[in-house]
Image 1 (cartoon, rainbow, N blue to C red):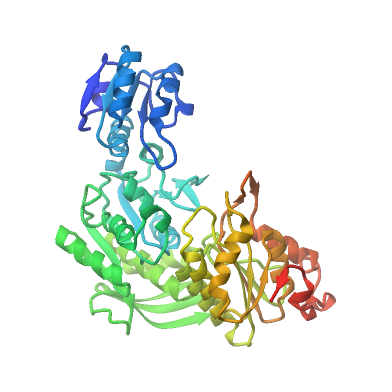
Image 2: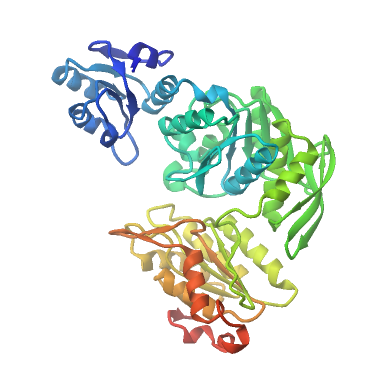
Length: 527
């Protein structure tokens, strides 16, 4: 039990009412309240936690922090025995309260945060692998999964609420962790979920159109990302690692420099990257990955990795610069890069011995899809194979990117299979029709199949030797969100079952001559 005065230390508040109490826990979800808890009632995007104050008190909350003046007044009248605090910003207050309650574990970890539209997950995994390779215990927080020391946990959110994040940090510290690597989403920055965290290293990968359903404009989207570097999140990082091949990256680098951060630049040689930056030269794509020469202010080194594609050159440069900032040597960085086998759902191959390539990837923006298709084209170029791209667009999300994704997929592919992603409350065919607006001018061969499992079957059945089938959008995800329910769904597992049904799990291709079957025979609507 912790006295409420200690829990509120350093947290600005507007009013207080009621008695001093001791706190046994901090919760923002009234369903998790236990006797002795402090309930943080916050106004959110989809619901208002202030509606659940009475429920939280009924379940045993002894203190309530609210960001609503009306809720404060009502609770003061109805529950005079409760410790009641009004704050100006619920999530910022929760960050300070949770840090106090869990004993400020963030101060015992060196924090590295990765933000940007694309590349966050792979960059975070790479940096985590580099730190682990030199035997530093870490906490990893991101889209695919969380790691607490060596324990892997499911990831409900890319960047969790501050209360949950600080609890993870506290568990990591107890397990001997000295570093934390985390993806920092624009939503988290805009909402104050990571408010006041003092990042030692902050990494900016790139910025392209996404999440405008939440931010409204590219300017506001960029402002959220920039706040990790210019002090807008409550602290300036010691080192900012920025992609200078990206227009927004150059702006972030300047903002970080003005704010007082040391700035490490990275990019590809020949793209205007200045001497003294981390840059890649002599890139060689191999059947088992790739290698390149990395020039840095600290010397040059040859990087060999199982990852492939130009986008992963950028991710490796970003992670390498961050690892150097965290005190690793060049040799340690390159050894750590080689140690990472793959990142789940990021250009993840499904191999059952078939004579074509099947890849699962999380690409769910037009820029990410463009990069994925370009990489697919590189893979099939030597044998003259085709690129078959399956994708969908998420429901209840930014609708403006749907025709852009349709255009990118159609311009870069030989066959496009339009299907569902996570349609949520929307009609799957209505989503597909919006994406079709980008396809119509291209006259690319296309199939329209809203059932994702059936669409995967169609795409794989269309493949011939030397082709590549790109299953884009869901990547590592294990479920699909429909209008009325969420169902188990794993692109890699579905693809594996399709391949097994064609006999590739047990037999060679020659015994199953499906490659001669045209896509028009496999169902869906072909055009």
